[in-house]
Image (tube, rainbow, N blue to C red; front, side):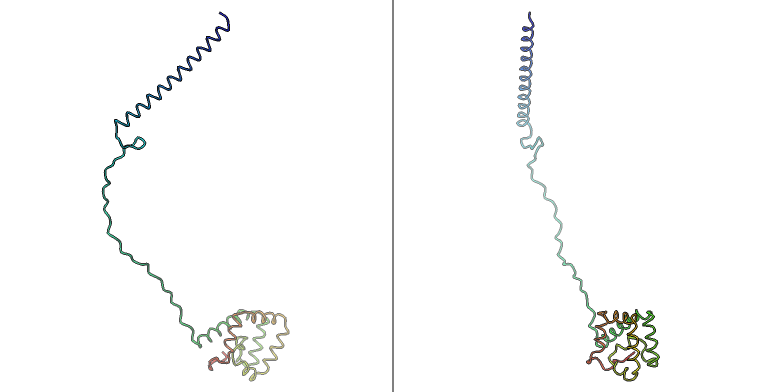
Amino acid sequence: MSKVSYVLIAVMGAALIYMGAVRWHQRQERKQAAQEAAAMQDGEPFSFQHIPVSLAAAQAELQQEPIPYRPQSTQIYLEDAPLTPQQQEQQAQDTVSSIVQDFNQDPAVEQFNQELQEASQGEVKDLADLSTQNLAQIIEKNPQIQGIVQKHLKNKDFAAAIEEIFSNPQFQQSVKKLQQPDASPNNTAH
């Protein structure tokens, strides 16, 4: 036999083997499908993805007694009572004193306070005492205070400290409160 004959026989053998494999595979698929169909008819008629489904009614669950509604308690914040005019005046004096005390360690302000006390025989201790309503009475009693103020305002360190004190909004508001013409008559220098 020739080579061509051997090649044709090999091709025919390969084709037969291939066709046999395809037929065997188709038969296996049909057999598996038949088994699944038989299982569906023979087994539990109600199943989902091969898991049996029971159609029995579910048992009623015991219910808890209803819980009564209780609204959340609201928190009430009480404001402090408004300050009386005397308390407002005291608060303004305390604010002025506190702001001025912050600058009392400055050498220029310290020198001013010392000269102020000497000129007023201790009646006026510092700048806070000059911020009261009766400033005109203090200057009338002690006219040398005006000269002391003018003298020290020429010192640039003192002028800078005074400018910083007077530009403080709390100081301005407190002095305004203390020097109101309708303030209580018991407003005196301390």
